[in-house]
Figure (cartoon, rainbow, N blue to C red):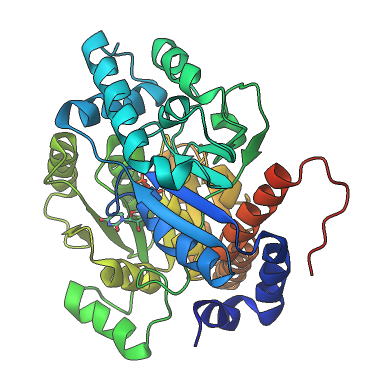
Length: 411
Ligand code: UDP
């Protein structure tokens, strides 16, 4: 079975036919995506499915990654943090290295990029390639995956010089978009319903999760899946759990990973363990980053998902839990607001007390909990699956390729 046919089983044949129609004028078009890594991180995850799906639609889609030096990646990490608001200036030496590496990669990729009809450049790392290829023929689009809502100005000012000459840019949320002299598009992230993280699990896979992780199937479970990061507020989650526990014998799962390669993560994990103390109903799991099936199962055994972030780019964990039919108690911030439709797919909260109140309410009103979970699943089906993401990419490609045509034949 073709890749698209597999998705048809989830989203319906009509959605797939629509994608085929949209892609028909784009058939054979050479489209190149460029980023800086093939593994790790959300961008690579998206390109792993986006490029093969475009190919299956008959588009000549390719994926190139740039090569860089240690100093180069040091510079781009500072840029990333700067876009997220970190007030650290980047030295001239590092910026020269950034430009040198971009020029080198432009040379390397000249043959592929110069005659491509559309080039998508992802994030700041390869952004300066555009300026190194004056002979380019196609439309170039810069895709920013970062929360740049309040960038450190000197960093944005520098990067802006490299991205302002693109034909368009794409952002995840309107709050993140920066003013640029070209069309700005908004494309929200999405999840892959067929990946190990999100695919259906058998009854056996789900029921074995209780034993494996020491959970009691007879009592309610609330779960937050997250890196151990201050902005995810795991300590606030524990506080909320304790407030609920005074009334309901609930269990809390805090599962995350990445602590070993993130010094701050380790410290947050330590604080979480300290706060959990000897409470046997608080289950803290430090998981390997590729343990997608465990995350899937832990999300499925939960009665309610919590994502009490105080700052959040998008919050894929929210989408993942909603896809599994769980209402989400989410922090009233960033992309969580796009997903948690207050009182419908979950509740937006600002404090542990607010979270506790909502958890108690849902555990007491099982019918409402069930209905919210069903709405949450539908909401993801309609808005945050990769088929919507792909549709928006195709529409955007129409917009940049056929900008002055008032009629496009979609077959
Ligand atoms: N995740 C994971 N292992 C963990 C913690 C998180 O695989 O231990 C996944 C999670 O399922 C989600 C992504 O990492 O797919 C986190 O994305 P999100 O947008 O929620 O937060 P970020 O970590 O990017 O701030």
